[in-house]
Amino acid sequence: MTEKKLFKKVLIANRGEVALRILRACREMGIKTVAIHSTADADSMHVRLADESVCIGPAPSRDSYLNMPAILSAADITGADAIHPGVGFLSENATFARMIEEHGITFIGPTPEHIEMMGDKITAKKTMIDLGVPVVPGSDGGVDTDEEALEISTSIGYPMIIKATSGGGGKGMKVANNAEELPQALRLARAEAKANFGNDQVYMERYLRKPRHIEVQVLADMYGNAVHLGERDCSIQRRHQKIWEEAPSPGLKQEEREKLGKIVTKAIAKLGYRGVGTLEFLYEGGEFFFMEMNTRLQVEHPITEMVTGIDLVKEQIKIAAGIPLDFKQEDIEIKGHAIECRINAENATTFIPSPGLVTRYHTPGGWGVRIDSHLYQGYKVPPYYDSLIAKLVVYGHTRAECIKRVERALHEFVIEGVETIIPLHQKLALEPDIQSGNYDIHWLEKKLKG
Image (cartoon, rainbow, N blue to C red; front, side):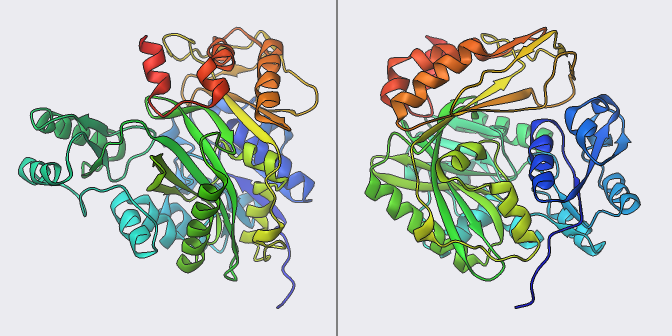
């Protein structure tokens, strides 16, 4: 096999902490970087540190970070030979990936075909069934009429959850507890799906009452080599949005994680997938049910890096460059425990976004503490984008040690000028259910209501 070389210059088609994360990986690999930015992000940290930067439009995402022609033009004028899409925005857009490759530039991600396949929840579910991956009982495809929905619900049993086929982030999801609630839940789900994704098609699944949200990180190269890097537990959620994540899960037995890992790795290899990916499952009563696959880097990827010692962004870049994995499944060892606290610029009680000027900023330190953030004192958090401003990532030899370190690090973390959900995380770290690992995906919602 001809020796493959790394890229000379990577354009980072994203913003915020993930753009900075990618930039740091590129710099350590000796790769030049191009930062794109909107007018609102001209003073962002990754723009300051990149080798080159290009303003691609005004603040609204549709005019900048979602503007494919502008991003491709930026790659052309700077001579970038690869584009990293980061997370969100165009990271799972098959059209974007295809356009990049048609321009002779490498897309640092999977093939457009695999993005397309996994981007449609119905196709993804059918694909996983064919690959031997367990799925939640539900409709075979999209549900078009109330009568069809009623027939499916009667055969499977209530409660049922209606989901947008093109959905994500909790949008286009509604629960029907009985036949009377079903028509309205369908109408609301369709309307929300249309408003958020431009596609009102929905499908249905059995609604599990007390499941955990378990996801498995995978890596696969272009030569049929595939591995998994263990699981993450992302059950602490609000409105289907993750807030607190752990690796490994405190709720799984060793034989369960090993069995799931083998199923997932076999499926990914058979699929011929390349790059990083995450398969998300609901886990209840000893059973795993596939929900969806994210064909990109995950926000919570650092906790997997902490317990495996593997840099996922660097591996992602090497795979895209055609370099084979230099380790096998038996080389991967999960050591210790890691927790990520997502720090959003939001009120800790109402969760109303809180953009504005950061007047004071002091990060925690010490052994086992990592901060992924683009903040600095004097930075203005813009009102136009996702409210995630920092990730506190903590490692410990044991889960108990890790939680104590989380508690200590949160006490040291200072962000003033904007409101954050640090106070919520401080409470979570002291909760008996969190400390014992006794929680499910509904736990936080119930706690907040109580």
